[in-house]
Image (cartoon, rainbow, N blue to C red; front, side, top):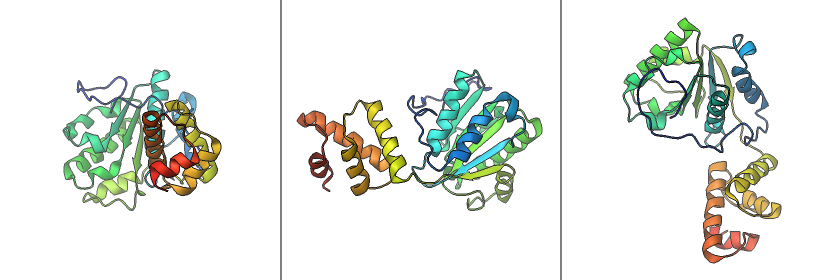
Length: 240
């Protein structure tokens, strides 16, 4: 939960992952939402876009990466911004949302985590109303389900989520997953062949979170045993 110029003096001690940028994002079949998010940071075009962007998708489809990349890009362009991960923010008072309508870009990640918090639902409802009134802020929200599938006690919040434009992220196919793993391996300084990565994708748990976790485990074991990451080594370490 890190931002640029934040209207309230609250310390949120979480840094954004440096490696989650637009450059390291494998778009796959999600080019429309990617292009839309880039336009949000284009001053001339952004004024014509809806103030609210809702991005849904299953686990490990790249929702958080996209919101973090937006925040990094906003920082580079000196655009006032804030990234808030609701799975972490629940330990803070919901009043941290006060004043956020005055920044230019607000990214709220993991909306599903407030489904059991009426206080946070009301605070977000009020924030959306203020943003709609002031028209100063672009709000980007991510969730693991579409706006009509979110189970909120506050029905008015569900209706507010439909005020903007909605996108659903698709899972990467094998070719794009291979590209993404190559990027992850390079970022970690891991030397691994294309064939070994293809084997990993074909035989390990398929979602990107699990694949990256497997890559990290292979790197650790490879260093410990002083072995290169090969298909036999992958089979041994991951019991495949």
